[in-house]
Image (cartoon, rainbow, N blue to C red; front, side):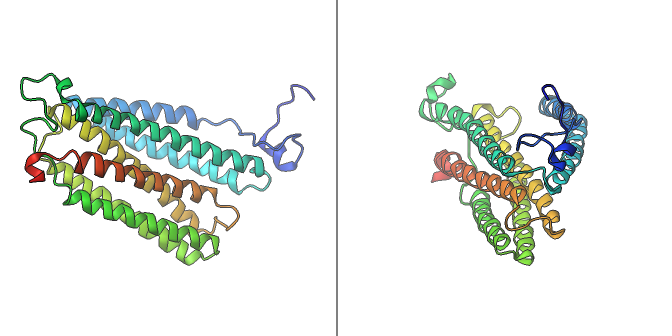
Length: 283
């Protein structure tokens, strides 16, 4: 009947006259927006005043909302009759479009970087127009950055190992592959933290080069953190036996995201670390 409001319960019972998934009202989108606002406010306070309290509160709020929201999504996914074929296809298109938007997000960082890389005179400094700017000693690309590159490339193979194990219904190797990938993700983050704390140019007041470097590599690090959390959730779901060879989009989305993170890092390594190294480092 026209104007009838159907619920997820109606969909499970099969009384809904269409194959689409109807989401019940949820408070988590509003809570997520509030947590994100707190987090970004904390980033501003940390960057300008070195006050990390609000940022820590935002981080806790983000993780809490993710836990509660993902819990509800997992319940929906495991409820028979909710995620029909049309819904499953829609989820895949949605994840593909989300990753496409993330690609454009990083394109903006590369555009900014190469704007000064090819046209250093736009910096408007009194020194010779060169890139990197005079006085900047860059990070040796064949030290920690190369190590991190090898770690991420290896993690790409381990997540693929886990995926093939899942398709073969090999739960033991699925859990192993996910566990190794998580450890490699944490290793990358430790390497990047060490690199930042030993950077030859400062995070604060480092000029255009430092801003371009830290915003590109820093946001990639944030994506590695998100991807690692994504994989941790998949790890515990895999241990609980919630993935099957035919129904495992949660894992598949995490694997897509992780491969995206790997590819972006390869571009960062080549363009920013290798091509953008200073004459002193190159020598």
